Amino acid sequence: MPKFLPALFLLIAMSLSGCGYNTLQSTDETIKSSWSEVVNQYQRRADLIPNLVNTVKGFAAQEKEILLGVTNARARVGSIQATPELVNDPEAFAKFQAAQGELSSALSRLLVVSENYPQLKSDANFRDLQAQLEGTENRIAVARNRYIKAVQDYNITVRSFPTNLMAMAFGYKTKPNFTVENEAVIAKPPTVDFGGAPAPTVAPESAQ
Image 1 (cartoon, one colour):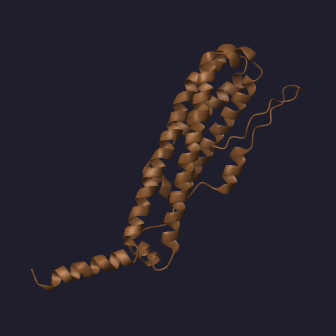
Image 2: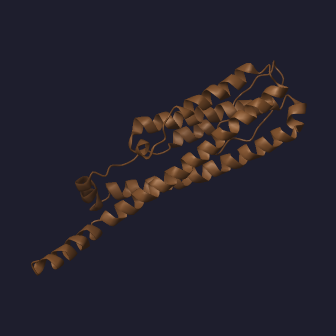
Image 3: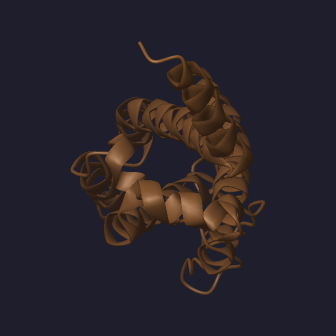
């Protein structure tokens, strides 16, 4: 091996590090791990829904439209493969975000309707499922916030000089993120009209 090769390798390594290559690697890995946690918490919520729907059906079977809405929204969420590659595709990411938002709205309507059924509200199984759902929504909010921060850090690195040159050289591009507009829509509680009677109020859903 020529004597100059070790020095050349060292020079290349130092150049890559100084131009932000390692930062691109670390921020990209942070996004992957953050995304995994977002998907994990969304899946936890999806797993709770069948039991929740069946419990509500036992006390309020006549609320077919609401129950069907939750079931269909869950099915649409399940039809989207939340792979690591999805975070690199703005269109696929938007569809995933919209499907989760639709499910959030459907669940909000279901919980509002439950206020009209005292026996359902007093059922121990329903209360347990509602508590689990609320806890999951909180975990979703935390996971999403971490993902948002990870993407922001990564995108800043990709766009900033001189790391943008390294990003272009190695094919790193900015990634889509959860949008402020989407957060505002999801956080808005649904309006429910029970034949002119005042609709029960629920706290805005902050987990989406």
